[in-house]
Image (cartoon, rainbow, N blue to C red; front, side):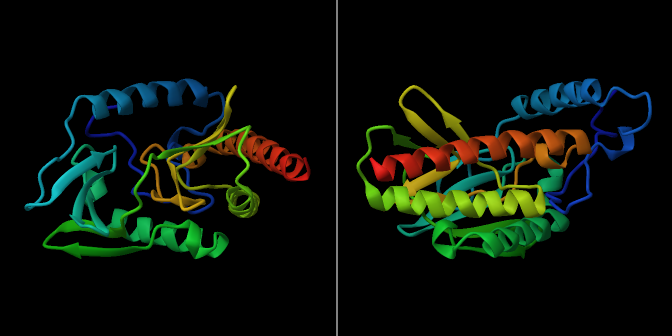
Length: 237
């Protein structure tokens, strides 16, 4: 069904009403089955390639499906397309990533978002970002007594809830509750501040098709409310 020549590309588009699989949203079409096939194709394509690990003389740090990350200096990283999906290096992808960054700042106080600049030079998309060191899988344990962290996380979650309700979308992070506490995937906790470091997701679950958007918003909203409720009770105890 999907090939290199015909698979639908997203270009980092987060605008409401855009759906990557919009061409398949037709009566009597099992869109969930289509998406399952699409995910198989995308994930197989991603795992068949190695991300770019060399850029000038910079130290390679990490890579995802969109970007490879290099340390520019002690305070800055450079992100360039990982080379897994060609469209990540299209001018439109950088434009949309910048728009996502700006939209996130409409809802989240700047202290929660890694400061980033965007540039296209010699046909290459680049982001320069303040280095936020730490694990991109921040955890807040049930036994924490860090009131500053709880206060900041509450503001962070309320910002996320407002954006989710208004825009039917969130940047690439997830919330999971476990036996030990709450985990913020793809969010780095530094100096008691949750920090968003990624602004788009190559496989953006909010912008695949309308039914998936509604389900994702419902699921994410439930997790955020659960986390907020726990923080409120924790601060009173």
